[in-house]
Image (cartoon, rainbow, N blue to C red; front, side, top):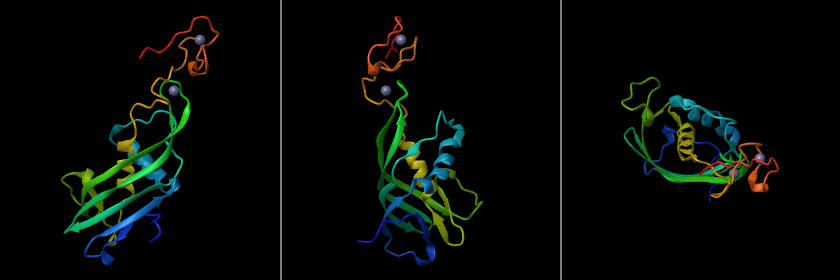
Length: 176
Ligand SMILES: [Zn+2]
Ligand SMILES: [Zn+2]
């Protein structure tokens, strides 16, 4: 078995006609600039700390090229640190998804009908890392809770009510 690739940069000159299947393991440091770009495009505003990846993003991709149309199938998963929206505690979780995408390979600056489904080719090379980071960001949970019945913080004194009743005397829970 071949070792997992540590990048998703492909060379069109040595592209196998039958397509290819690759296993990958991308380090958090490789991903963070692309992930931050994915998070802030389309006017998305990042609240609080940028998301933390606690492991490499691992997965596999099956790639088939039809002219300039690239079909991707596969899956990925990564261990992340999330902040509970209710009690603000940090906790570990796993994010993963299947991949089912089609993109067009284009020259830099080339007019594209739909910019979301193009990948630029430079010197016969293209990089799928930005696309993977966009897919990761799309899979990021919108509502994050450390546990379904998280009690949150006391609205009067800020104590974490998961750790017991606070002693402020006016305990106020978040309604949910
Ligand atoms: Zn919580
Ligand atoms: Zn309180």
